Image 1: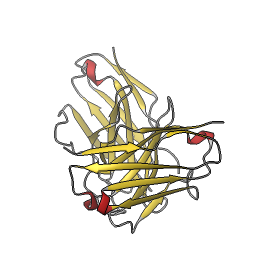
Image 2: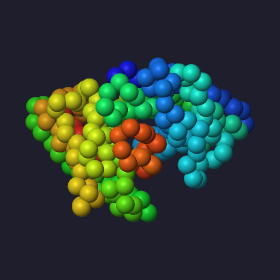
Image 3: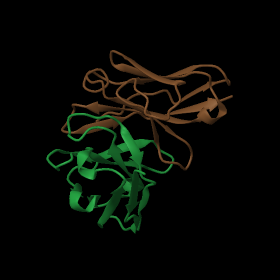
Length: 112
Length: 124
């Protein structure tokens, strides 16, 4: 299975907004509304930030939002804060084989 | 509190086997699909395997298919990963994760929560 494509890095200043893209195919991102986003700080387990394209789990700040257009999903973080600096991964259900999930390569967010 | 605790990792020689376990608590275990995800040192996340609530649907990444076997024991609230014919490239931190809402194999609501991970090192 091919990994979803994310930019290796993005950066922004405190208070700004950034968007991380996640490009797949019609067999994964484009074919299902089963896209999730995770935040991972160094040495910590990943944390679910967005599920089913645009839903936020309880406790996740509304500064985080998700969307999808065609085969590309996006995570937008508004009002950047220092604690948002982390690695972000997208993932999607895929029909490439039975019961499969695929991750993106990850994006390092730097808050300048 | 929903909690997942992995165990069973360690140093193992190439070609040998290892069995990972994940003990779940704080939720109705047999209501949810469960997964294993790994992360090699300094690398990204890689989905390894998933199993539906009743073990009726199972999937594996191509990189582990034929070598790894996922299973669960709902009576013991436990998830397992039997890893055979281990290779150096299997070296990683292995996480157990619960699907947030899905029980079967044809949906994916995101992994929440994750365990703290158990480290597997394959080296001679």
